[in-house]
Length: 225
Image (cartoon, rainbow, N blue to C red; front, side, top):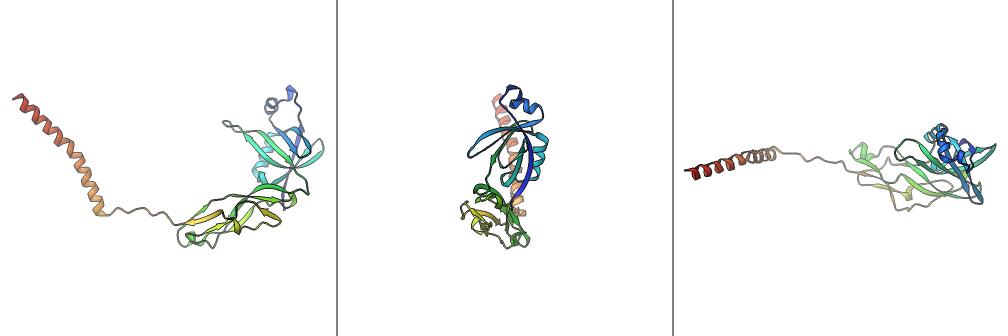
């Protein structure tokens, strides 16, 4: 079942006094709702409320019921623009959705369990793919898709073809790797003989300049005589 959240917004016109900069100065975030068969509607939403909302949902796969002037619109968040230098959201795009119309969106993949290759062989689990694209009706949007990796041993992988999402079509290439377990990294041990050879080479490197320097002094003394 789709995750649903609520948010209240206010209409915003193109008037200079209600421009994007003025909206941000008032502690709000400029926003827009768009969709097939409707004109884009410019809004403003509370900055604090929006941040709190984004902290507790998966934006790409959560239906957000946006209420404007008492009218509720079901939407998905399509883009959140953040300031490149300062912390804060500068704009957010909502897309209106229709109950009987399928959507294309990405949902996160969550790995479940500890792989056998990690628990018993000291391997390293690497999640290669973190989201998959699906086609689904709004009511069937999953919050996430779980994949059990408990049986994975070193050198083995799981692929998109092993995912199962009820009432949804997976559009991501089924051959792509989702996760794999690799062998642990082994640090090369330095044997006593190798260590002695390194120390000997360092000693020669230190002594060599002194020999060259002494030879140069002898040559200079011979020239003076």
